[in-house]
Image (cartoon, rainbow, N blue to C red):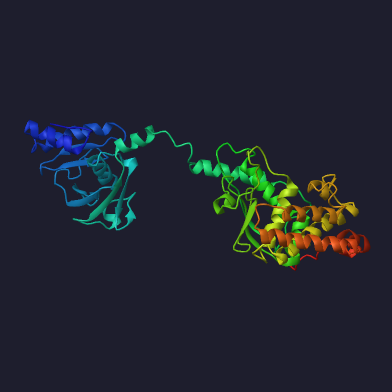
Amino acid sequence: GARSRGTATAVLRSAAEEGKVSAGGNIAAEAEADATIPGAFAFGVCACGVVHTSVTGSLPCGQGGHEWTLIVSCKGRKVTVPCKRSDPVAVVLQYAANEFNSTPDLVKLLHKGKRLVDGTLEQHGLKDGSKLMLIASSMAAVEQTRAKKSDPTIRGFAGEADLLEQRQKGLKGDSVWSEGQDKTHKFSKFQVWHFEDATPHPFEAEKLLQKLAADPGVVDAMRRHQWTVGMLCEMDPADDRLKAEGTGGGCTLGYNENRGFRIYLRLRLDDLSGFRPYKELVNTLLHELSHNEHGPHLDAFWTLFATLKVSYLRVHLSLERKGSLVGGVSTAMLADLQGDAMDIDGALEAELAGDANNGALKLEERAAAGRVYTAHMNARRMGMGANAAAAASESALSPAPASAP
């Protein structure tokens, strides 16, 4: 009789062509002969005229015909599967997989949302006429997927895991500073910009953001003003908000979103060959932190910025006078301050003078920076400058007390 390990429909076609649809006995006998092949599935047409399949090599209905007919649906198509209540799930799975041009390892058989794997049909609560769903991928679709080349711009799960592992390794090392951020008043998260062939690597950009956040002078400012910033972010190198606003005169070095929800810093040089000087990044960060309190660049804003700048330099001057070293060097050297920490007035006046002549600012904003600059110059002449205050009182050099845990 006709027999095949191909699809059940091929068995039917072959049997019909030879006029042996009713010759189920011969087919069953040949199917049983195949039981000597380990794991072989046999297909055949029994006396009832229906194709059956079995993992044992014998046909489900044996000499007495099938007991049940199950309905299996897949992708809008339905097939009926003849079987016995005592048949294992694998029998129906194999039959249905062949009907839908797939293999058992690429399909799942569901009944009322539950996947059927082991056991018999009756043990799973099935009965004659039960409706099952088959989730299957055709062999052609699988081969097509395997043949496709992966998109190099999209990371798979393994790539994401590797990226996370590298990131954790890169950030797990000791902080640049001896201490980290305040437990309460801090930058809660960090975000860097990922782009192709970035140099320095985004991992280095995140380290730089963390260095800025844990800088003793910045930590002091966050504590004193009780600020908490949601996220400190690297600014998109292609983002130029000044040009978008039509103000001209330069590029945006940073911006504050919703008064401390996010702060963005342009970490990289214009040619993307490296990072901007650390001291410049600190000035930008102090500038953006001032926007936590004041929006427009008017007198109140520049006064707060001047206060933050003076306090920042005082912290590093205090640590240097105490002989505090990190990795054998002073924090002032790590902060790229050079002589600024020893000449607080000069450093502040240079910064304010630059802002008063910054063509990227509006006229009234430059005028406000100029007024604060003049006020500071007058105070210095009267012996009330930052240098004099620092020399007169060591208490002025002490960092703010840590916030309560």
